Structures are given as C-alpha cells and as structure tokens.
Length: 60
Length: 179
Image: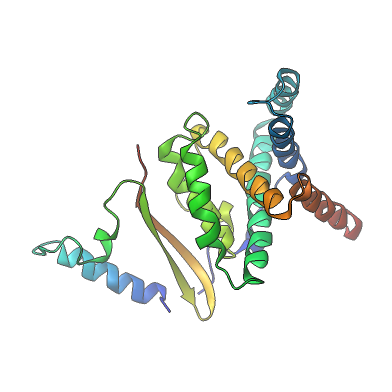
C-alpha cells in the first residue's frame, strides 16, 4: 500500500533519475508520455485512501 | 494523517439546483433532441443568471455532490459484482467526453477524470479540485457534462431513465425529513 511518504520517496527517486537516466520507461514520471494516457495514484493513511494524484496527457 | 479530501468536510452546495440542470439535460436527450429545448434553455439560463456569486458556488458544489453520490452508488453496484468502479466507469466516461469536444474541451478531461476517480475512491471531488486553485469558467460545462454522463450511465445500467434523478430526489427528501 502506497503511503504519502513512500510515494514522495519514489517521486524523489524518479526526479533524481531524470538527470543521467537513459531508459525513458524506467521511472514513475515517464509512465505517461503518450497523449490520452494517464495514471492515477491513490495514497493511503492506514487503510483509508487520503490523497489522489492524477498524471497524464489530454489530447489538446 | 487526515485527508484534505475528506467528504465530511466538503460543502454540499445546492444539490436541488444542480439536479434541476442535469435532469433538464437528461430529458432533452431522451426526447430525441440534440440539445435542450430553447424554452427550457432560456429558463435554465435565467435561473443561472439569477444566481449571485454565492448561488453560483453553491450550484458548483451541488454538481460535485451529485458526482460524489452517483459514483458512490456506482461503486457499491460494481462492488456487489466484484468489480472495480474506476476500471469499469472511467474509460467509457473519458471516451464519451472525447466525443463531446464542444462541451468538453480536451484539456478539461484529466480534471473531470480526476473528480470522478476521487469520488469513486470515497474522496470529495470538490476538495480534490480545490487543491489546485479556483475553478475556471471553462470547467463549468465539462463539470455539468460529467454529472450528466454519470447519471446517464446509472440510468442505462438500471434500464430506468429516471433512476439517477429519483435516487437524488429521494435522498434530498430524506435529508429534509431528518432536519
């Protein structure tokens, strides 16, 4: 289960990887680079969903 | 950590007025018209124009409450069949929005999907959206379309063209009785 703290750690890793990273599919941020695609991330505190993040690209 | 999107802290808004607007759209579609009846549109326009800033905010909050209630019903209905409401509802909703480019500009779709996913997760769509600043004028029609599409989805599932409207009306009646 993804907590806000674990999500932040994953995000920090992804941003860190963007510096010298060569694999475009290798990190969280690169999950959605196609138009009309997106991902949502639900963060939990205990068993309760508490935060929602949406990442993606619309067709505009 | 408490959620910034806890529905208990969300404003309910004017659900009755929001339902009036959505029901008007549903009736227009069911009568085979491509848009609202001009007379009906005039009445809706007069009604929304008569709202002051607070009334407009209440209408907006009411539309978000409708989305929350519709998604809550849909989540329970899908859970009864072991299905995930987001998996089954959001893709078709987005596909419908993509076919309505005049009402729902492409750039509004991610936000509308976010509102629906928040509601389907048990979070408040109003409070989720609020984290990103004030609503914009351009989001008003997509918001109305989102509530309309969810109502239509429920009506299609139940094979009852009035089910969604009746469900909200009955909930409103119950809340009045309890007060």
